Length: 262
Ligand SMILES: Nc1ncnc2c1ncn2[C@@H]1O[C@H](COP(=O)(O)OP(=O)(O)OP(=O)(O)O)[C@@H](O)[C@H]1O
Image (cartoon, rainbow, N blue to C red; front, side, top):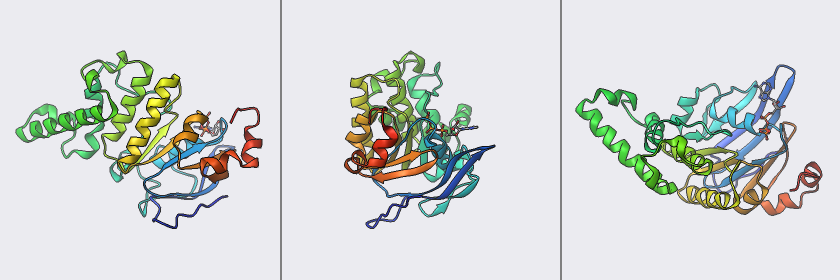
């Protein structure tokens, strides 16, 4: 178990002795970790280390077998994913999960619904107040597309975009709920070098907006370039924490990744 310290600001996310058991498999073995606001926090580790399971526990897809997750001082484990989205945490998935026949813009508008009073689908009833709300959602959704560089593709079916742009669209949809913490699960998976560089710039701009980013990623160049802090998981436990420079030189990390090209 490892605990990091955040002397300058109260943590945004506190993970306290989280354990996750799947039958006989212990995917997380008691993790303590805090993430301060305003940083890019990477989570790395070999396949099966527990990274995605940790994201599932934070975003409410899984309830930890033991331990607590606190977000901005509020205990959130046991809350449902849509409640957690309302508290200010959104996420993307390892495999793209878009509505492929809907337009790029509509995919964002759907993502807006946790923030609206009437909900995206009920705006279809088209009462005047709802029409105003839909117009507002449309404008805000377009501004998210502009932020990520996809405004020109707004009317295209999402499924016609190349993979790199679909992944960016997923990030835009996660941003549309106006999160304070965004969890990105392997956003660079399947991207070429240029797309990965653009993704890195986007993640830095997201952080520049004051949104805390947690990033699970296997692309070590990207991780080392943009992360402020790294948590290394190994068989469900923290192996090391630190800055990219500290992690690069950590003998336990080098040993764990030996042959895996860190
Ligand atoms: N729903 C599940 N049922 C049973 N075992 C699971 C389940 N989800 C994850 N596991 C197991 O928990 C462990 C951690 O899996 P997890 O997907 O969190 O790892 P990971 O670090 O994200 O791996 P990868 O880098 O390959 O995505 C693995 O041993 C995995 O097989």
